[in-house]
Amino acid sequence: MPPLTFRRGVNIEGWLGCPDRPSEKRPLFFGPADAEVLAELGFDHIRINVNEQHLWDDADKPVRSSFDRVDELLDACARLGLKAIFDLHVLRCHFFNAPLRPLFSEPAAVEQFQECWRRLSAHLSGRSCDLLAYEYLNEPVADDPDDWNRVSAGIHKLLRGLEPRRTLILGSNRWSGPEHFAHLAIPPDENQVLTFHYYQPFFFTHHDAHEGAASCHKGPVHYPGRPIAEEDFARLTPQQRQELAPGNLPEDRGTLVARLAHALAAAKRTRLPLYCGEWGCYHVAPRADRLRWHADMISILAEHDIGWAVYAYTGHWPGVRTAHGLDHELLKVLLR
Image 1 (spheres, helix red, strand yellow):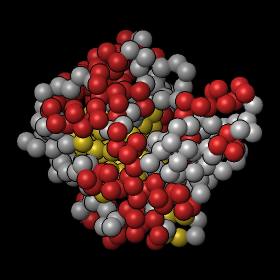
Image 2 (cartoon, rainbow, N blue to C red):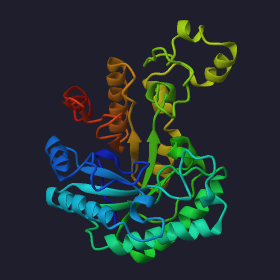
Image 3 (tube, one colour):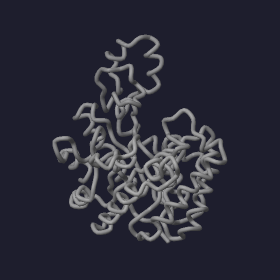
Image 4 (cartoon, helix red, strand yellow):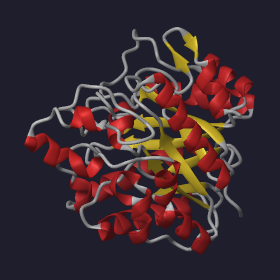
């Protein structure tokens, strides 16, 4: 059967995908009322970012409050006709920004990953296949691409055996960069979606974020053009200039498109839909440049018939809502 179609969506970041386990007393960033807002605006799906540690405690017991919140949100989506992607965002054995990722070196970690999906399938399999899809793992980072190919093939076999009709979402290796589709093994299965993430130019989209690659530069950034202007770049130390030069190349719509070549080729070869599961910009980047970058990205995704989920609903990556309310100017760009 053909896979679900995802057109315009939003990542639910900072919900059950935050570093610390949510407290019963702490308000959530997102709830059924927010899902209603997205449906009314014209979004057709949400990507729910959930960490393993929020679902099962340190004694490996289910965290009932977390599963209740998942069920409440999925119930709201079903009522509103919103599709949902359950994104297993961070594992105890794999975090995309951690220096060590046992998932690719320890057989016990692979088994635990599979057990996560066995248990999730047991809980979620009653949900309509017309509304819910599973994404194996957010931003896998294996030093050897064959390691991710091996691990993802095992998850595909497991889930396809448990749920023959469920749409499955397979991401590329190395933070789901589109260029890494060149090394991705894609199993023969028509009910799949291929996903990638897009945050280029990184110096611009992640400027002053905690994981920002150009953290030594505190001055302005720009798009289009070089993210760090030549006059600002000249003020850096020689060591800083040497470190940052490879990522400070001129950027425009053409360079954004060029990076998609391997992803587009994989989609054409397999006849599977392509999906940009994350793309967005940290709130510090200049407002006008941020809007220009979003406008170029939207036009590119539309031109190549790529569905997407902007990162994120609110917070430091405000794709829909700021602290002052809905960002109507950005929404006009996203939903045009």
